[in-house]
Image (tube, rainbow, N blue to C red):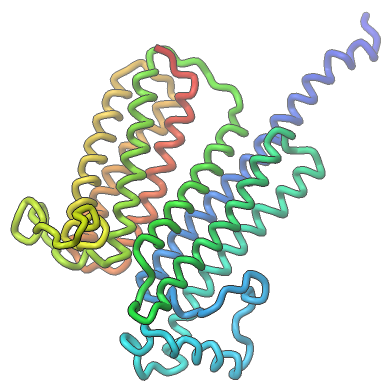
Length: 359
């Protein structure tokens, strides 16, 4: 009969493996929680934009700005600052303090939630490092993501500052697009890291290499459509024509007058709306075609689930986009934006399950 010491040699790896699996699940859960918070942030930011509240806070102080005004004097001070910008004089002339507060709180919540995301990322990261629950090779990458999260805050201020221009009442659309696109980059990076921590080893899946290539192309299409959507919201291009499938009575939008011509894609509302329409429809058709192609193949259940979700979400996304275009339902555009993030999530999840794809 083997001794206790000999048994320990065989049992220790199994115990370590169980502990490692538990640590991976804990770290992955933390990263997925951060993803959820970023998704909520997209909703808060979208509501802030729709409410026209993004310019209500005239300074950027990452530390002191955590607290809202706590006295009448403090409220009057921030309100007086807001009264110095063109948006107040053009859109809200005569607004009282109560009206200003209705603009202030969404933007305050938006900034506070951003700080909270940083806190929820940083504190558990330090704890996991100290308790050695995170693999050493991941620490530099996660530290970089934290730094990039701080950069996202700076990009947000860079966006907001464009709205203080004497000739402007809103932020510049391209800065809005940059802010949103960088947020989606961070979201995708955290999501992929969480999926990899949860499942570090790729499972070989035969006859799926072509499907993996198609999913990569789909992610590019979804991302491009989302970027086009930021210019629709940033310029309010969804309000110029609320008919489908024609735009202003024609299949093609009117020719833009901006020079050089490529500027019309980003600053001429009919072209902006038409671009998003076409990209959205093309992406929806491409996703559905890829989903059917994947389901017709002999794919395992672990791939079938995310690809089915991808198909369901793209149908919902297209329906939400069309409803946002032709109706005046409150916040439908906001739901459309948040569902786009879920669609992107399903696409990355699908791609992650196909890491072991083989010809």
